[in-house]
Image 1 (cartoon, rainbow, N blue to C red):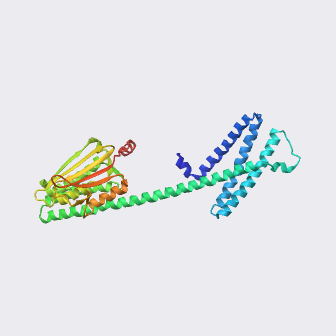
Image 2: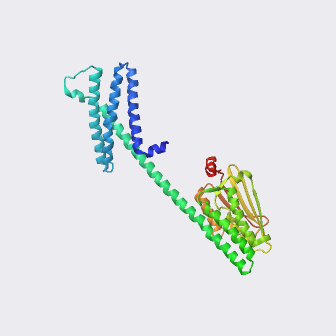
Image 3: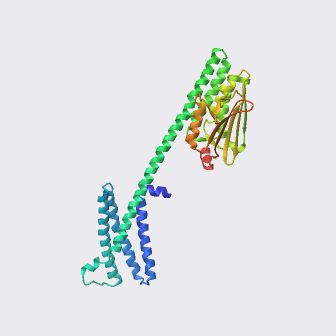
Length: 364
């Protein structure tokens, strides 16, 4: 059990602090007795006093829990009154133990001597009360913090799922529209190939968690399925050049992060050109960051400060929103005009690798 789990378990946390705190009190008194060269029998008195303090402060916990939601003045009054009464009774018990055991049955001349000089005990009980409320407030703050983090995480997950699933209908519509066109012009063989490739691609997307990141190598597999679908449409008009370093293949990336960018290039750089075009995909690791690049040799775009002046469709906007949600400000997404023509997309994200423990679990 780690520290956070112990703090979350309030019942166990109280008893751990209660017992260890009074043991610490006893040890401090024991060290003090050694300094003043008390007899060994005094150690037994210290143990009894610490044990009595431990037992007498337990009811305070339940009293404070009952008045926890009362007004501040009521709470303060209860704390000081309870601490004074408990501290005074504890002081009486300490004197009794000292006189009976250490001084062999000594009896004071007057009964009120049992109640004299008991402020030290009251101060210790007040400190106990202060620690109790301080720790309880700390636990409440931790609980609220965890609830806030959980709510934020759930909101991020919901947003990521929405953005991720938004791609599927968009891509599916375009692909089904292409299949419909092939059927109308009676290219049934090509239409059948597209349906087969589409089936494999959708199977991958349905089996991939939209929230979890995947190794870039796995993402490239999905991208190749997608490109095979598009190559059925465009045949020799579509050329793809992929250059991925070995180190980059193990990098974790958001699932389906490249597909909308490739689709955007196909739409503007391939589909509208009789001669087709080329799409280049690159990835490398530099300074503990993953650098992704997608460019084409199409007509380019109207850019301003590395961004499109006018965004149409969901591909680029969706990718930017997903990166923002996942990495906050620790990423970059820049568009630039390619040379001699075309559009280039550069993405920079932190380099993360799948842990060996996760790999082991997946293999089992």
